[in-house]
Image (cartoon, rainbow, N blue to C red; front, side):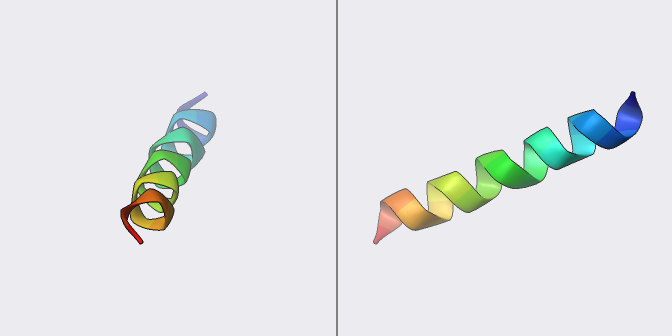
Length: 21
């Protein structure tokens, strides 16, 4: 499903932003 892939991409970006701090 495209929705699941979109959620995965967003989750990846959020995790990277959190790890930056």
